[in-house]
Length: 472
Ligand code: PFF
Image 1 (cartoon, helix red, strand yellow):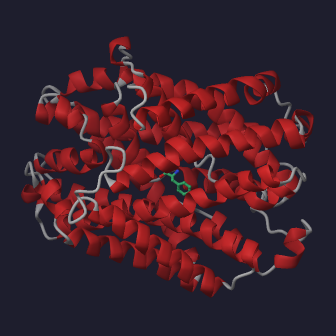
Image 2: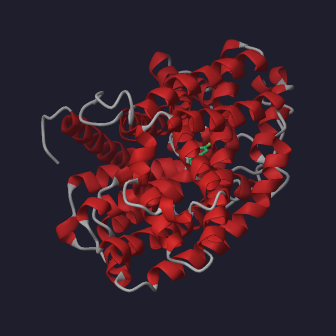
Image 3: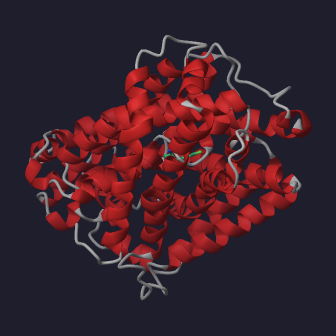
């Protein structure tokens, strides 16, 4: 979801010259506007679709615990860094990395941050297409058919899923073209509270089904027996993804805020909000796996399809199932659309800023990237299902490549930018313009030692794992 952020971005385009001098840059109207913009970018398919399936697959409660620890430590330090660097340099990632000199390696660091959203938005749009199809089917009243065991696998295997993907990407590209984001933003302001209310309602319903309590326990109580190293790899990737870290977004948002925005406090608020929504989605979906499939390990490990398999069963068993299905998929669709727009917008601004392209040209190229990579991901479940990249489907591969490989590299680049180029004291100076920076010592420790070492270990082990060198 997005709020004001996009608006600010587009306004900013007309001030190209002054932007590079750091003057005349637009800013968020206030502290609340900023928190809403970042929370809006954070809440999306990552919370509702991705978090529950990863938690189900990688150990339930133990995944949640690892996720929470990583979020409060690494996540916190990285959000503070990206925001402070953005505010300090008044640039988006490529510019921010170049602002301190440092030569080619830093240039590369900026670029990797900028390229990640361009690779995410195509497969994000494939999932967006699935959501659109489900909304359409609920509106036609196919509530029972959607709950059938093989409905989802049949749907993604037949070529029609590509059309739904194209409809979704067309909507995204059209909005970028028209630059009419205000309407979308207004919708998302109403949508967020509605989504929370509906999610609470569905979660309570799902948790009170017979047999569901086992699922609640599986999701909330850490069991060390379910731990594997992949739990850490997946939790770290999810943390980046969900909080919109390590993809350049927060540099850009940071560059719009004024010096009186308390970076520490707003970071904490965004983390709490984002995690609350993800946990709510977990409580909707995981107990339902236990209630409707008896905690079947295959269903728990279903991966990207989990939301589309379990929720229809919940809706089919409810009194107002069709209405609930329509509402739910409509809200998720809006969340997905606004997030996809903000990811794509970030790609478009990179093209405009770095290559001096017109908005028109930048949008056409971004649209082409979405269609090319997205179609590959969608067809990976159908005519291209023989393609296996390191044992993964094409969509899973893009997801793995961005979240488990590129984002850790981007985060490492930020650590180096902070410690080697900008300097920890300068970051502290920036943060302290608006708050006491109580966690400064923890922050320094993380940025200097813990974050780079741990990210490196996780990165190397996850690559070795897919290459078959080790087995996690
Ligand atoms: N954080 C979003 C999610 O969890 O779905 C993904 C995302 C959307 C990242 C928009 C970045 C962004 F600009």
